Length: 559
Image 1 (cartoon, rainbow, N blue to C red):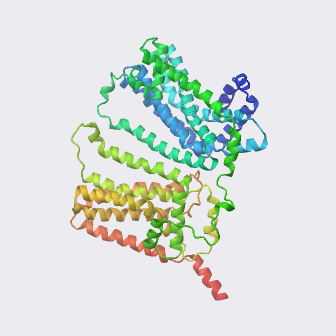
Image 2 (image 1 turned 180 degrees about the horizontal axis):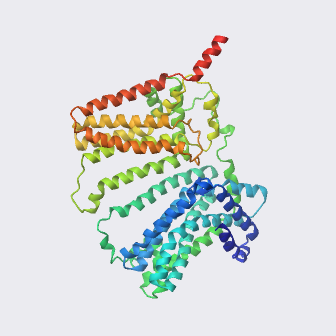
Image 3 (image 1 turned 180 degrees about the vertical axis):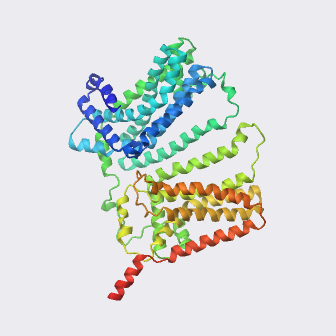
């Protein structure tokens, strides 16, 4: 398939030459990047083994989404409006993929290899980048669009089918150029040392928005009300670019509609063509700005504190460290993990989007009836237990990410350094995650439970809190890697197996908690047992001596 994309790009060589780019360089760069993607088994932002079949599975999964999109035409009678919804989903899904992977695509080291080995102009590099990302987006668009294309060809007509193909290209153009122009403007207007931070936080916020928008349809009650829904040609049709494309479809196939329909069609054409033109215009100076990013993150003498000047710490961190750890290796580990989690942008990019999924799903699950109005809204004890055990994920997700780092090779220090109390490092790691993520969440959740259901449920809160901490300790021991010692694309079962174990055991404990409520004195006994295990386990982590202790004693005796 990659050869087909390269051949299609080659058909536009006269256009690239007229724009001022080098067609041969574009073809070579694009071919090299696609080969590197294939050899690494690039799928969903991770490097997979070719034998794993993950890439084919991802495309098959996306094609299933494409089949579900065809059902929109059965829910909405107005074809332009239904098609507008389909293209809106395309933009949300592909835009989310581009944004979450943009740190890989925008700051790709392979572009630096090209610039340093063979000088090329800004436009050539910029076009090769958008074409590479275009291939990336086109594969997803192809999987999403084939089922709808079959529907148009078989049930709507030949001409609407060709219009649909054209609008599919427009959808990809609007999505790509809208995303890439934002990043190019950043490169041109913002200092290099701030670009990555802005991009990182934008990824986090965009992930929140896209995921919440994706979940909103589940709050809708009776879907039959959409049968007669018409947005294209109406004021609401200006709300989202996907509906602009619906207006263009209506203008090209039905040759009718009011001025709003043609206005939406014109906006769609301007957005697609104008976005591409603006991207080309903004590519001037792109190579120089990209090279400037190469120095970001390096430390100079000016960045270091003056000799004898004490670095200001975090009051919250210092107070929690004094409460949760002893002034030894535990506190060193606590401060180290707290600082990394607070300052490392890549950690935030991996952790915060994952943490927002569970709260959104939980809120939608609990409050769906309140939004739909289909039945009286009520919250029972099952919801209370769901809240109590939801807190487990607030610990496990960031705890798992403290094993992952882009600089994972630096973790050799944990193996090379003789440490008579190795478990104190994991204890400090666990306490840092509990202090930063679990403590504020627990205060909020447990306050809501006690305020809504009443103080009589304090035993449930105590047992749920103990189980959450116990599961975090189980996960931290089963996932036995050193802190920040694993590459983010390391997908061995031994790395995601502990998360799978916790995912299976947590619901079992939740159901067990539910049935324990029916047995007299079961809750207090269970709470004492669980907290006894937690306290005993913590004592063991803080005092257990490792193999290095015995070796140091033998060496000392010999001396």
